Image (cartoon, rainbow, N blue to C red; front, top):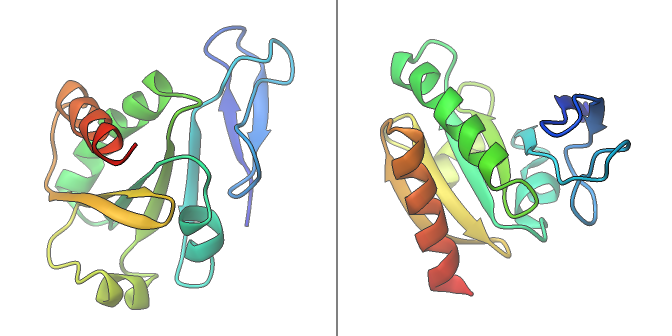
Length: 144
């Protein structure tokens, strides 16, 4: 699993954020929470998403999918807005056919919310950041 590099929105320092870790990623310079965005596959999903201590937004997407490319900036904004409270995990359906089958993914993008490894909400299609944030927050509230 390759770490993602994230710029801290508070101080601008670039930080390496691992795909899976205990705790919440923080800036090495100013210690503010960072957006946690990771990729997962058939082989890494359990470690990256299901074992996460934070609620996880799972984005099932494909490179060739126009709506998937449209929803990506909105999801990144939500993960930035909720830094330290959620983790965004992207799953390429073309590279992870077992996960697509396991979760019966029929349309992309499909978004799932997982809390402590359990799917608590699911939706298909693109939406603006404010709508996705409300959906994420509602799903988290329903399970805590």
